[in-house]
Length: 337
Image (cartoon, rainbow, N blue to C red; front, side):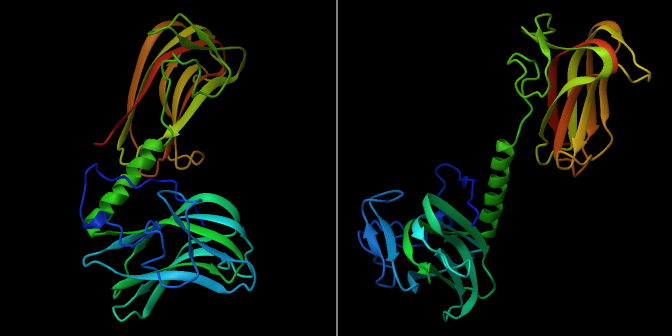
């Protein structure tokens, strides 16, 4: 079962039915298993994820289904339900089937409590620390209730449950949730950094020197080669979702660059756009080129982004030529129109 690594982002102070946990006594804070059906679980006051208690199920022989459950009505206008649970496992043996584990399973039910479908939220074997599991389920047609099952599913061992939740979302709230998650993923994505080289060569790949003859600040990068080979540095970063254009700028300076066999064998500043970090989304874009000995020159280019461009790479290099290329104050800006 894959762990969710994205937090649910909600506006501070937001309230309403859509943020209410529908599960009663999901943290076993009542000091008992009240609101849960079944007599096989006990309350553990010593090992818990949060609060005072957790629920625990033990089974050392027999490999039977051993669990508790709770049936909950789904509020009207619910479009989706987000289920989550914290689980800790201790020597859960497993079995011939993957579901022979410590599990949290959700059954979607009609108003008369007939089965519509099952959704597996978590299945755990072996020994683990406290781990959170989440799953969002679109409510199927006809579903009026759901049943949460916490169990050792025909296996032996010990399993602890805590912070069991079921959060309902209207269509609008669900769309907002997905948008918040997208923004969180975007914020966590790899961003372009250190374009002015004030933090050394952090973020850039390649072995180069820093010099104090900078265009701005204290440092610039210097790329030198005595052989007419490709010598340079690069940086890969993520294209923010929704971007329409990319603007790339920077300062270049040439010191005794001797052009190679081809007219483009100079000191170059190149943009590469890819679908996945490897497959090109379009032809490479030349931002700037310098040769011989030139003072600091500013280059600034804006390009339309292909719809499938997810990554970009900036390259500063001597393209099969000799001499020294200096670069500074590299900037990347994304435009939404």
